[in-house]
Structure formats: structure tokens, C-alpha cells
Image 1: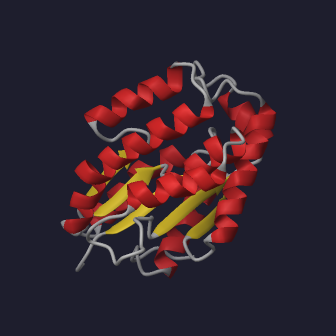
Image 2: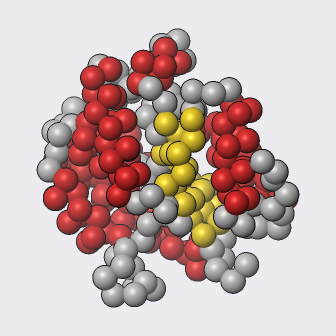
Length: 218
């Protein structure tokens, strides 16, 4: 592989995306890829501190957005860009689409400001002028909010976001749908209401169809 590629996992809380990251990393490693598994917010010592604040401290939507993008900048600089430069596959649990879905659609925060922050933070010297770092493919685990809520009900103590009402997650789901419509070539929609085995089959088929996972059959 001449250069690395970047796969993000997106979806509302309870969609099941996180449970598929480790199996995909294992499958890719079995095919000879070096894989970096990471997450947002987080992925570096600094970004993990900011993650803890975001999940547990009260703040307004602008503060949330600024902390998210500060964490993302450090994450890009210290983890994602170096891994891609080494030719690795980067699997990231959430990236910027989550910010537009949660802070943008969910909180109702100005998307123009989010776009400005996205341009500032994700510009990289290795990219052509005017381009920003985005995943090569985004696996969107699409799940009705009421189903997600039922899955989370007994799972664990909810964080500050998971404790929000279902109307919030309806808006977040709509935010993801909007981002997918804006970048149809990057997004792959997975029906996350199916069994984990069926979702895994959708995932591997999608990646095999793009030549990024050999041996997976429809």
C-alpha cells in the first residue's frame, strides 16, 4: 500500500459502531495492513482530558465546539497525520461529521462557524491548497433514535450527551443524514437496526466493493 487511508465510524449513541472497530482492525491486520485505532474526542493525552470535560462538565454549544476542534487539532497532529504518512490504515471512532451532527444539528449551533473551524483545523501542509483532511470513507451506522435509546437504557451510566432526550437524538440523526447527502461518495450507510452479524456483512461488503478489504464476499 503506497499511502494510508482513513476510515471513520459515525452514528448516534447506541448505534453499535464501536463494536465493529476492533474486528475490522483485526481483519485488516490479517491482510498485512498496519492499523491505528483511535477515537474522537480523544486519541492523545491532551485530547482525552478535553473529552472528559466534554462528557461531564456543563458548557454551552460554542464551548463544546471549540473544545472538540482543539482536541481534533492535537489528534490530527500527533496521531492521524503521522499514521497516514507511514502508510497505515486509521480507524477512528467519530470525526468531524459527529461535530456537525451533535453540536450543529443537535445543539442548533451555527453550521457556518463549524465549517470555518473545520477549514482551520483540518487543513494540512501535505494536502493541496484548499483541501482539508477528511476520512476516505465514513461508515455511518444509521439507527432510529428510539431503538438506540432502548439499547442504551440498561447499558451503563449515561454521560452528559447520552442522558439527553430523544428529541435531541432525532436532530442528531437528521444531522448525520444531511452530512451524508452532502458527501455521498464518502459516506456508506449501514442499516444498524439489523443484527450485529448482518451489519458486519454490510460493512465488509462495502469495503470489499471499494477494494479496501480483500476476501469479503457479498
